[in-house]
Amino acid sequence: MAQAAKIPIIDLSGDEAQVAHDLVEAAIEHGFIYIRNTGKDIPVEAIDDAFNLARKLFALPVEEKQTCLIQKNNRGWSSMQYETLDPKNQRVGDFKEAFNLGEFQNAKAQQPLPPSLPPTAEPLLSALHDKCHALCLKLCHLLGLGLAAQPPSFFAGAHDRSAGPSGTILRLLHYPPLSSVPSATPHLDVRAGAHSDYGSMTLLFRIAGQAGLEIQTTSQDGGSKWAPVPVVPPGTEGDPAPPILLNIGDLLSYWTGGLLRSTVHHVVFPGGRGTEATVVEGETDSGPRYSIAYFCHPVGSMPLTPVPSERVRRFIAEHPAEGDDNGGKDGKVVTADEHLHMRLRASYLQMYPEKE
Ligand SMILES: O=C(O)CCC(=O)C(=O)O
Ligand SMILES: [Fe+2]
Image 1: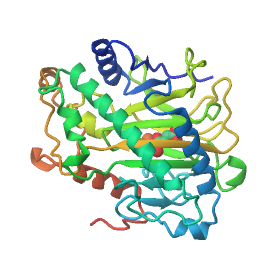
Image 2: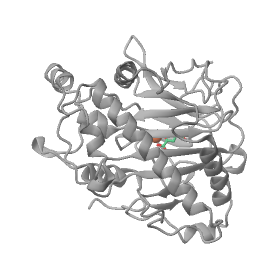
Image 3: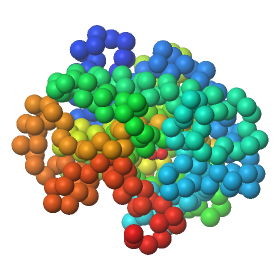
Image 4: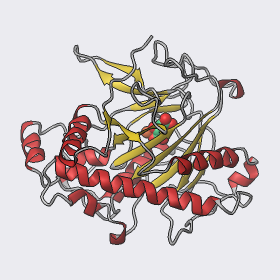
């Protein structure tokens, strides 16, 4: 049995300085952090409602979902196998479908929604977007404190929605059961290919009992292996909802010269590729799987210059080659939007058939 990933669990209601310190250390060491969900930041009901809505949405006829087909703005419905997160190592696309929701304006979606969804869908999704954004701002504030950024509001300011639009996406995900995708071969194919996330940070909501997510960990001998990430880690069983899984994305890693870790992860089938045994006790991966990811991005025009923090400056001086190469040529600073579009081009092969 593969060992479950050792990911720290943080309770945001603790002493602020201590929480900020623990968050930064976990972001450096692991890149993945469980945020205990006591229902204060994101009400449990809001998460349950969103999952119920996701079930309804993905069960709609293909013809209706097709009216919302994903566009180059990264919004809309991405059909089964449309996305390939790890094109170098996948023979076919991811066995998942997704619905990407960009930023709302005055609680109104700026993209088509399937017409037969209930009228409650739009306000519900808009409210979840807002709650997730507020939680990310809180996490930005804590990261600024923990890294002693100057000013400490550096990250929060870069994510201030009043400063302009961003590539932030709330994504509903559906992974059909293996039994309904006969063309999939578990030891060759994946539900979501290996990747790191593109934005600054991701909040991931999962359903207790539904296995499949694994992170890549580095062992002491320098080799890497896959470790399953339990939905309900020990100590959180009595909480009103499973912890929210926070992970650092490429932007934050780049911004900190590689100090904060953007960890590679994937979602596998039962007995899936690269795994010894995927299933964590109490979890199953034979049924359908749903998850909801909130990919938080800074304001799109934000230049990704290194974070003004003494710790980051020292790290960069000691590890000049660690930073993620974000595609900027000759040390040219790229913006958050430029970085995002570069990544999207690499994973939506059908949308971008040729190099532009
Ligand atoms: O569904 C999951 O557990 C993870 C999804 C994910 O990694 C992603 O969409 O970036
Ligand atoms: Fe991801």
